Length: 249
Image 1 (cartoon, one colour):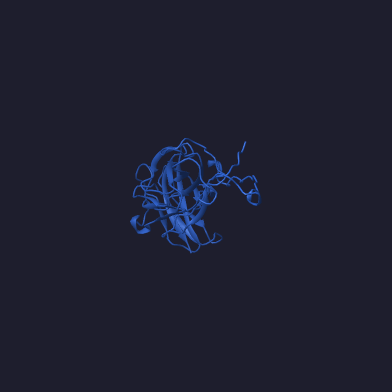
Image 2 (tube, rainbow, N blue to C red; image 1 turned 90 degrees about the vertical axis):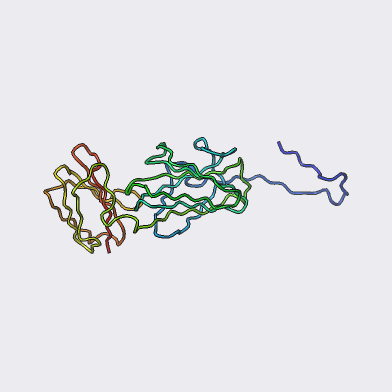
């Protein structure tokens, strides 16, 4: 029910009319974590526009007094040193949470250091190259006016912070990939425990998978688009032995 009334006492006969309407706001495509929007981690901040309007609460907020609206993003770490930055509308108090590996993964961070309209950011030098991280963006206070729900988000990192041979998962291994960068053929030297390798793009999509055949294997990337890819090396029990970054140019 909606009660409409005059703010000040009395209304002249010619001043009493008004118009009223009710309309629906569609849910944003990333309202649910299963539809999280991919963010590409670059070397500088390139914003992706987002909105909380039309969203609802998918999980309880990790901080704040409201948190009844949230949307989801995800990114693949291409270097161990990354910054996540969220720049809200001047009337929106924004917060975000980073989860490791999945929508229900371990919470790595709950961020809201500043006031309404202020940019929130987080930098960490210990992201695991090749891992997928999920970011839930939400309102710190309950409710958002229709003109206040917009924000921009980006992920960027210091590529030089990682060594020329990117971080290895688990035990040290002798995996080597060369030449890097490459325009066509790349050689992969496997440890004896390696059984499978995957080629993954920066959205986290596995675009190729094959079994290893020998200590050194040649992989042809000539038909791949130029860009950065991740080689994931798996062992006998499908455990990750190493993750390597390679540039196709």
